[in-house]
Amino acid sequence: MRFRTYDEALTELHDEPAARRAADLGAYLREGGWHCQEWNAKLGDPGVTRSREGLRFASWMDHPYTLITAKGEEIFVAEPYDLNGTRLSALARLARQGWRVTVRPDLALHYPGRTIAIWIRKQAEAGPTPLLDTRWLETDLTRDIEDWLRRRA
Image (cartoon, rainbow, N blue to C red; front, side, top):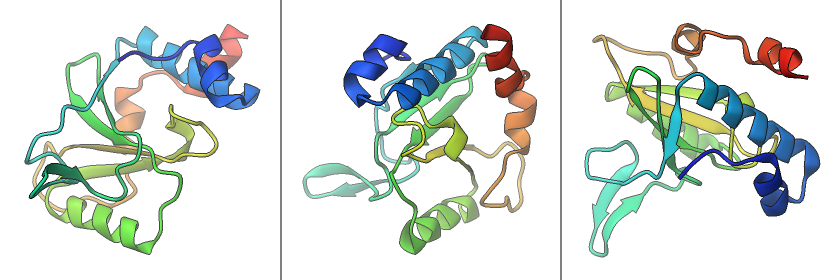
């Protein structure tokens, strides 16, 4: 799995602004040393449970994939089209279990503007974490994406 080019995104989405945003976000992350891969689900991953049929994703796990940062950190990503009260409760439960859950609509790669990126990673330090947490992104993503996009234009 890899980040999509503009032409690939436009073919899949039939939406020029969304295709441009998907391609730009992918280029931004790729230039920062990040890469994208398929989420090979295993028990113990956030939102993954066992059923009689095998492993099952939670209902909020739409369009799942994994991001690997330049430092090698694994980030689980889901991009649902909406977050209702039930789904937010499930994300809050993950945060209470020690996962760092970050909701970033501006970083959705699947269909920017329509889907909401949920980034989930293991918590480095002990203690509670807020459900909506963007501080770690500000330090891990060392460049501001909007400035980067303006410089590219």
